[in-house]
Image (cartoon, rainbow, N blue to C red; front, side):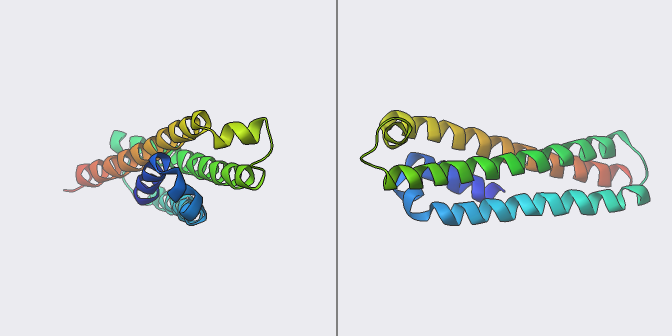
Length: 140
């Protein structure tokens, strides 16, 4: 997720790179979302074998949040890349496609990418941090 998020932020400020490498970012963010889903699933399978603690509860909550936010991040990336693709194909059109191709549209896209990338990275890092705390609290 952090790698996809970093690329999304870079692409937010370089729309030409987003147009050129956007589909790669879609694939990377899909893999990141899938990784978050698999991590949450594997954590649920192990949850019963670990001693209960407040840190463990926090880790489970953050893991669930990270899973959802990673999926939202993927959806934002997919929507942005698809919208820019159709805006380029319909460059002579007006309305929504013209706005997406404009500087205002680029700013809206940049904000959406940066916010979703930031949220995804924060939740993944926080879930990992809570997992580390839970691990060290259960050590003898």
